[in-house]
Length: 242
Ligand code: FES
Ligand code: FES
Image (tube, rainbow, N blue to C red):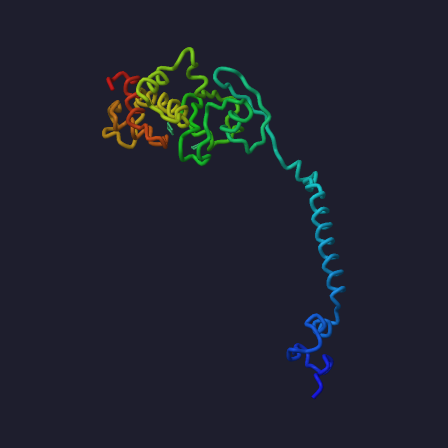
């Protein structure tokens, strides 16, 4: 019996092998495409994809519409930072921390978590400690800010800075500016009689105990775990032997 012609096969059914026609020929019959057609189509697709990629790479990123640019509200803010008057024009969303670090280049104040959880960004605002990452600079127009650069200098260390060195109150040092700013405020708080969570009697001045210091410094995290030495340093500056 004669071999079936490809034209006699149902669609999708290949003839039994061996046959006198190749699989390319069968595919051509089933699809109506020749090998040459497929090669030309593949080349065109590849070229088209390449052109599309080139074109997209050259498309400039869209500028925000002028109406959106105007939505970035700015304010002029005047601060006294480490005794120096500073006037800045800031995006209203700028944190006090970013104003200090990015605009005034006072990089002694550190950004740890940027979420109020580590205390690395602690500065003194009008004499009280604050996490500078949690507040907007525009809220403090006219305020006085003290950073670690304003507490002491390499030539004239603040007593807490000297005590941290003496007692090895740091390892990597990343948390240290915040620790020292916070500790200076803690000593003022105790002196002023401000109670803490562990103050037993609210009618008497808080004690300068290690328990009080640990509680008051609990917002300042030290990943190096220098806590006991930090307490020793603060205790010495507070006037008690470590
Ligand atoms: S950076 Fe502000 S609390 Fe961590
Ligand atoms: S000294 Fe390294 S995090 Fe405190």
